Length: 130
Image (tube, rainbow, N blue to C red; front, side, top):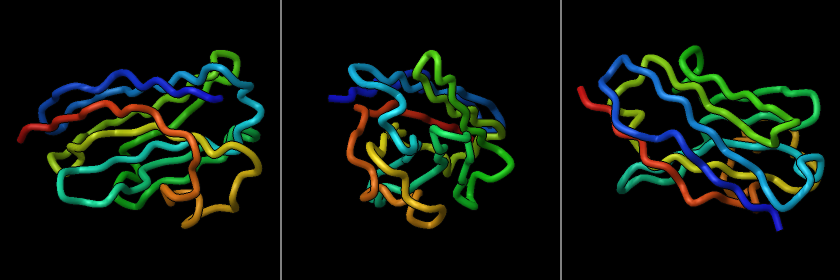
């Protein structure tokens, strides 16, 4: 059973940067179709932020983070990263890493939907102060 462990959350001032990491364990990275980062703020639904196809590395971003966030992967280390720059107070949330085991779904909007993902990490908190 795939396990995901996130790290890298914390507190930062608006305009600052953070880098989140998600390490995949207990399964082959090749068994995963796509990896994604999602976030959930208090009182709001969980939303897709960025995803990456494990084969080929194609990336998909939510409009709200395009140009500011970058998702990447190191297949050898079975780790996915989310580089977050120019952070805004509205980016504050619990950030979750997720894996879609099996065949990947084709593109947006499906690949950004939380329901498409079947393995989740425990989450890491990101706080952005104005």
